[in-house]
Amino acid sequence: MTRLAAVDAQTYWMSAKIPNDQFVLFAFDGAERTDAGLLEHLRLRAQGCPDLRLRIVDEQPWRYPAWVVGSVDPAQFTVHPESDLSWGECLDAVARLADDQLDPRVATWRLHLFGSVAAPAGSGAATVAVLQISHALADGTRTAQLAAWLFGRPDPVAVVPRRRQRNLLTAGVAAARTDRALARDVQTGGVPAPPPARPTLLTNATPAGPRRIRTVVLDRAALRRHSTVTVDALLAVGSALAGHLRARGEDPRQLGAEVPLAKPGIRHARNHFRNIGVGLYPDEPVPVRAARILEELRGGGRRAAHPAALAADEALAAVPAALLRWGVSKFDATVRSPQVTGNTVVSSVNRGPADLRLGGAPVLLTASYPALSPMMGLTHGVHGIGDTVAVSVHAADSVMAEPDLDDYLERLRRALGAGSSPR
Picture 1 (tube, rainbow, N blue to C red):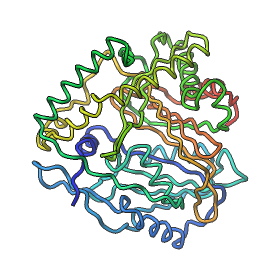
Picture 2 (tube, rainbow, N blue to C red; picture 1 turned 135 degrees about the horizontal axis):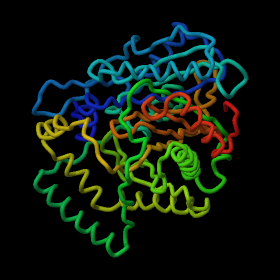
Picture 3 (cartoon, rainbow, N blue to C red; picture 1 turned 45 degrees about the vertical axis):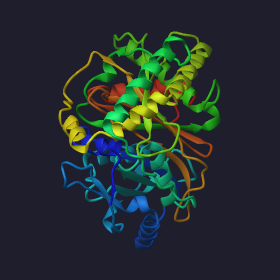
């Protein structure tokens, strides 16, 4: 048995307080027959990927949980009986899937299939597949690789090498030393300082009531008008969200987003990313906003590449399991903070070429809906495959009830240059 890396164990334990299953959607062009033959093909495909055969055993409180290998259970595939769904009806059904979170001790993932969906692209009815996956098993980048394998991409998913274990005292001293070096580098301008924390806004309200997801689909070229796909998406979110908040009496001048970034270097854990704050500067001219957002994204990458970041990871990896478990147990999800890293989340992942298939149906689009948390009632996903990008919204009723969500989505479509089309 291989023990979970400390950060993956932390993610697993934290899921009991803040549900964090990921939901990765793929729409395929054609109403495929979701019969026993297709399900067995998918099961055998999953059986050929070691990570998709894993589950968690957590029976020793003083040790980290362990990964154990088993067989892929046919029960991990669910064919939903609804048929002839509109795109909105399908998204409503996908949103409800979050009510049934995975128990990674039983299964670390589940695949949901919806037939005959009127997707916003393609030649007619589509088949929608939604991979529900425990965050302990994979972050966004690795989830994309696992899904790609499941849907026919030939590239095997790389094994995660184990980190060289260090003594906690030694690792802690190294982390403190490099952290002081980082502070000096920031002070002298060698490394950009992180943006300041931002005041909470309406979007940081505790999620309550129904949760809804929406998706705007557009050509990749439409999100390269000013900079990269990620920067252009952040520009659009900044414009749309600032207008939406102002109309409700909020001051969005300090509006910012929390953006997950893949860490540089060798992946020693299934969760190999960090979150950074990025200002959205809604009152600045677009060229200025684009330049500042890109600069802050690059600054986050430079801080992630500093020796202090690696030392901090090694220090966390050296924490005894019982101590980390105790720390997670003390986390209080009801505590509110007046300041946050961002007023929304914007998670952006390129899922590669449009080479995936479900049976005989080629992939049309992919999307994801980052989980909500006690201080984040609105999140966004930006996910591309081939020449198609989906910009998605996940909102709780306490932040955006349905009329407000419709208003925000219309603003977002206009900011993206997608007009009022359901695409």
